[in-house]
Amino acid sequence: MAFEPSTGVAAVRAGMLAGRAWGGAMSLLRFAIVVAGTFLGLLAITFFIGRVVPIDPVLSVVGDRATKEVYEAARQAMGLDRPLIVQFFSYVGDVLRGDLGRSVSTGRLVIDDLARVFPATLEMATTGIVIGVALGVPMGVVAATRQGSLVDQAIRVLGLLGYSVPAFWLGLVGLAVFYAGLGWVAGPGRVDIFYDGLLDPVTGLYLVDSLIAGEWDIFRNAVSHLVLPASILGFFSLAYIARMTRSFMLDQLGQEYVTTARVKGVPERRVVWRHAFYPIRIQLITVIGLSYASLLEGSVMIETVFSWPGIGNYLTTALLNADMNAVLGATLVIGAVFILINKISDVLYRILDPRARR
Amino acid sequence: MSVPLLEVEGLTVTFPTARGPVDVVRGISFSLGRERLGIVGESGSGKSMTGRSILRLIRPPGHVSAGRLVFDGIDLLALSERRMRALRGARISMVMQDPKFSLNPVMTVGEQIAEALLTHAKLPRRALKARVLSMLEAVRINDPERVAGLYPHEVSGGMGQRVMIAMMLIPEPDLLIADEPTSALDVSVQAQVLDIIDDLVTGKGMGLILISHDLNLVARYCDRILVMNGGEIVEECRASELHLARHPYTRGLLAAMPRMDEDRDVLPVLDRGAWTTGAGT
Image (cartoon, rainbow over the protein chains, first blue to last red):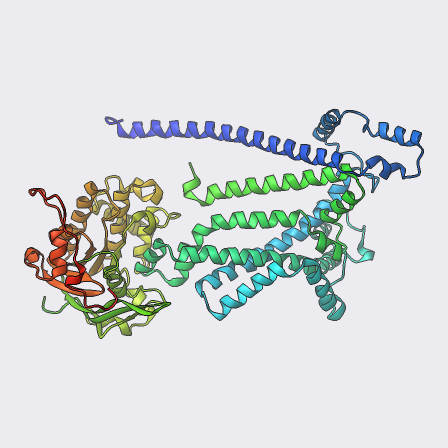
């Protein structure tokens, strides 16, 4: 390398590239193992807890007046007479084939139910997190740059409210004011009753489906139904995101390299956004990811208040009915969402933080 | 030294505390031509605050006041924040202490140097790049093209500090404040970094304020020395005459330095009673 610097460097580069490809394959494999392990663990825990709880899934099928013979027949039909471990592995086998079983309470395949309820939650949660990020991040930054000012105090109070106000109360008050009182938004449900069932479920997201179908009326109606619950969810994530952004920014603004930027004569706006805010994008991704994941779990309170047929509602109903297939299926979806969001944050980390790149 | 580059009169920096306001710099006065001035003192003596207050970078709730704070005929205290910003970097610049903390971790070295220049001058891309690379060469970085693309965590401390110097000198300021520029570095690279600063500063006929706690170092690289203690200037002398210093604090500092050619069992410690006036110290 000392004699022929250019070819030497090229060889090292090529070696590094090959190493990187190999490392990439390895990390993909490791990722697959981690995901599979996480899923298996999640399945096992949910499955065994579901079998241990003192509720009888057979009773929820045959009713409590069935004869012993009918009960036993149903029990065998459901495969519940087999040893627990056998049941577990047969369930895992089914899941791998894409069969989540049939829901006792709705009588439909769990996978079909999930295809119906998850998009409802996804639509609301995504709108909510967009509102939360779009408002929460700038609010946090502004609060930090004017620490102690009136604006800062106002944002902190708002953040405190987001922490302490119960969701269902805010939902009810929101409905009372904006729906019943002012009539600015539509009431509970995803669309008005006479639009219901008109859309072909392509994605299950009403906003997207109505656009695909070119149904502007339905789109407008769906928006007006979505605005209030999504804003309330947005408010809660906004409160959290703004608080975290504020404290990250305060920490950043005290850093030496922010002073360095000021020494260079960089305008304050650029100091704040380019020098102080850039590094915290990485921490914010974690905060936003967690916040989004918790919204995707489905807010049972909000979904109940707004009669929103989402996954939170579905899971709660299934739990109360000892509908174990539905519970397991919904838990799996939520677990998958968590893993996916975590993985996306990891990738974004690597893109945004030069220190995490290899 | 006909017209001084910087005139400071009665500079005071005050911070409010729970027990009332505390003056960390107490009405100090000095002036500076296109020469190398050293400010020495222990931690908390107010030397860094003096440097930062010249750039008006004391963050609230800290407060700066002075009878006169004039740079090249410009009254710094009367400037709007906007005009002050135009001066920072372009005419007065500051090398910070530790490149590990003072370089932005998510911007490449080249970007950060370029930003220092772009803030004050519009330049076409190509010329900008050429300037950055030649500046990196000026601070004796061998492979400027490669280093410009590195992130701060990928360079060593000594190289980081040379990058810092490049960044602060690229707009060709008239006054450079170097605030403990080598305290975070290994002894072996300290001299290297200071030599670079010295070369560039004398080569361009700039003024330099070298802030340090290291008497030897300051004596070697400066023309004049201010010794600060408890927010006040207790001694002012030519660097070559440091050994003639009379103030008990300076004498104490000098006495506390071990020498190669002597054999002492115990180094003397400072006897603060010899000079404290009572207030605050």
